Length: 325
Image 1 (cartoon, rainbow, N blue to C red):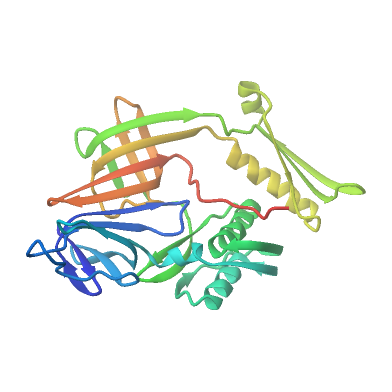
Image 2: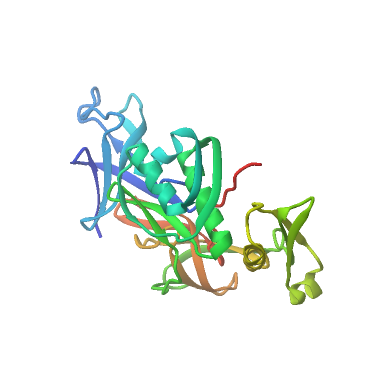
């Protein structure tokens, strides 16, 4: 397996490269370390901000994006940091009002207005009655719209960058293709469980709270018997129907009535295992057994080796955000 880094289309002689991502962040990141001198006195190549880095693995493109930072010392040791094109979602703010638009339409509008190239934009279906944003980043606006969609429909979407274009894709049930297990490809692992964020009952209030409120309560009797009542309260748009309020409560309970578990695994590298990927893990000491989603990943290429550090979750914890009221 061979790794190659291209700077502005030309190969760099790098010492190491770290390619990382997080499902809560807009962009993936590439950190490169190299010796940028041949004589010990001058730079072999001038690195410029805004120029493109690409990461190739056996000829397959894993990353492309502009350089945002670099540093170099007197010995020519240099570090370069680039982000994929979705970094621009967090670097522009605006005030916007969207009325009767789907999340996908909002994504298309913002990308068109700010010159962000797009690829596949999945139809999110649910028409959001109204969203008002004040001094928010494009990323905040998009994630808020996707949060409203998920809460109403249960369907999950994520934003990614491929070959320099923004894609909005649905997070569907995945067929697990990759298995990590001790004695084979796991180097180290740890595991933890928590009910800190669990809720066993959900109350949603819509309509006019003073004259004609619409109230829906959803509860999990088995969880209440085991852990007691822990209620999540949420107020929703006044123009939501009674059935929509009930659906919101039901969907919230499905998401909040779970035991959070987090696993951390260091393993031999696989370029197909990145944030959002589903994998199966078997590790005897920690008791990690089953299917997990990758929440964060960090792939390091150095000296002909490829290792990855992963944070795993049993739930697909995509980023969430709501409009402040």
